Length: 493
Length: 126
Image (cartoon, rainbow over all chains, first blue to last red; front, side, top):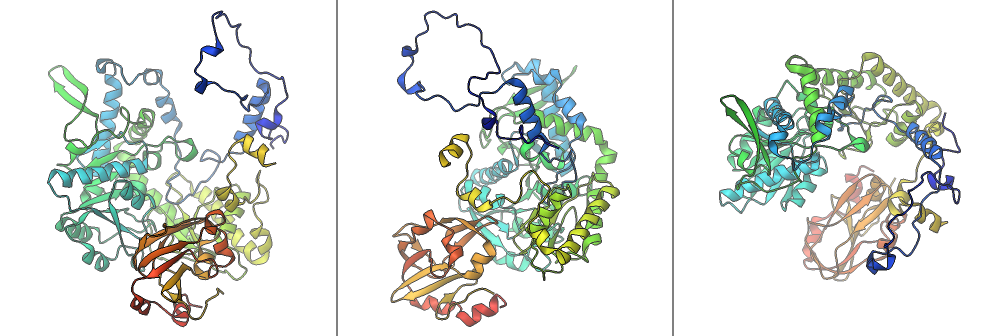
C-alpha cells in the first residue's frame, strides 16, 4: 500500500528553505558573475522542489511501487516480446572490467570487450543464417533505417538509381513505412489475404525496376507464418530487389528457422525483444543489422575485425570506404550487447532451440483456451502471438479498451490493443516462452472472468480500472495538451 | 449507426466530396471518425498544393491510430479548414460539417469513380 502523502508530486512536497544537501564554502575569491556572457545567465530562479533526502527517498520509492514490469507480473504485450530479463545479464553488464572502459581507449587495452562484440556479431549471424552483423544501431527502428541504407548503398554501388520504392505489407509495423520515408524511399503497400498473409497476386504487378526491396515481418503481425515466403523472395529477387526482414517477430523462429535460409538479404534484430535485454521504459534498445554475403562492405562504420595470428588472435576497429558511413558514435550500446551475449551463452546451443517452440506453444495454449469467449478471426496454429477481435459477445458494448483496463485491476499488464489495424477491436497477446502453465492458467481464468463480467456487470467493466493508483486517463487531452512540467501545471491552475 | 448524407460522393478509404460548382469540400465520413476515435491532430496540405485522386494529401491522428488521408479527386487546394488546427476534435463532433480541404476540381469525371450514399452504406455494412 502506497503512502498518499509521499505519493504526491515531488514539487508538492516542497517546503521553502528545506534542503537535502550542503555545498562546501566557495573558495574562489575572484569569481565574478558579471564575467559570464549575458546569453548564458539565468535571470529567473529555476523551479526546483526544496526537500530533504528522506522525503526524496520515500517519494521515489513510493513512485517505483506504482510501476509494473515483467518482474512484477505477466506482461503479454503483443509484438513486443516482453520476456524476462535474467539477472545474470545485469551482473555481466555491470562487471567492473567493462563498465570502466572508455570508447577512445587504445584497442590493445579493450581486447576483451571487442571479443564480446565480435562473438555476439558471429552468434547472431549463425542464428540468422546471414554473413555479418553490425551491433551499432541503438534501437529497432534505427536498425531498420540502417538496413534500408545498406539496401540503397547496394543499388547505388551498381549505378542503379531508379530503385526508389520499398514494398511493405498492409499489416506491417508502423516503423517500416516510417523508416523507408526517413531513408528517402517511397512506400508501396501490398495487401493481405483474408488469412493475414501477403497476397502474392497483389504483389506481382508491383514488381519492376523501381523496386529497391521489400520489408517483411515473418511470422507477420498477426502471428501467422508467411508460408509463401520462398515464392515472394524469388519474385522480389527476380525484379532486382532485396528482401528485408524485420526482426520484431524473430522469437518464435529462434533456433528453428533462419531468415537467411528463407531468402532474406538484410535484417535487424531487436536485442531488447528476442535476446532478453531490457525493453520499454527500462531501455536502452539495440538493433543489430545483419546482411548476406556480398553486402557486408556497406555496413556502417566502425567495424570490429578479428585477425588470426600465430600466437592467438587480435581485434581491431576499422573503417571501410564502401560503408554507408556512421550511424552511431562508436560501437552502439555496449552494455546491451553484453546482456544479449550473456543470454545466448546462458542458453547454449541446446536450449536456444527451445525458445521458439515454447513461445509458440504458450501462445497457442492461451489462444485455444480463450477462443470461446473472445472473437478469433484467424483460426489455426499461430506462432508466438495471436489477435482476438474483441469479446465474442459484444452485445453489452464492452470494448477491447475496457477489457484491457479491467485486466489491470487483476494485476496483469494489458495486451497490445487496437493493433494491427486489420481488426476493429484488436487485442494482441504474446505470452513469450518464459511463462509457466500455472501463470498462463491464471491469466486465462481472469480473461474468462472479465468476459463474464462484461455480460453481467458491463458498467463495472466500462469504468475499470478500479484498483490502480490512477483511474482511466483522458488520452485525448493528454495528446492535445500534454502537461510535462510542474511549471506548466502551476500556470494552468 | 453512422450518419451518411445523400448527394455526397464517397471513397473506399472513407473520404467524402461535397461538390459546390467547380469546387469540392473533402473530409472524412462519420463512419471514419467513429472508427478512429478522438481525433487529436489533422495534418493538412497548404493552399495552392495539388492533390491527386487516389493519393495521400495528409493524415488524421487519433488516440488509436494515425491514418492517411487519400484524396478522392484531383485538383488544387483553395482553402484548408484552419479551425481544425486548434480544435481537431471538431471532426468527431460533425465530420460532414467540418470538411478538411476545399479543392478546385480539375477533372469532374473523376466523381464517377466514387460511390453514392447508397453504395457507401452498403460498403460499410449498415
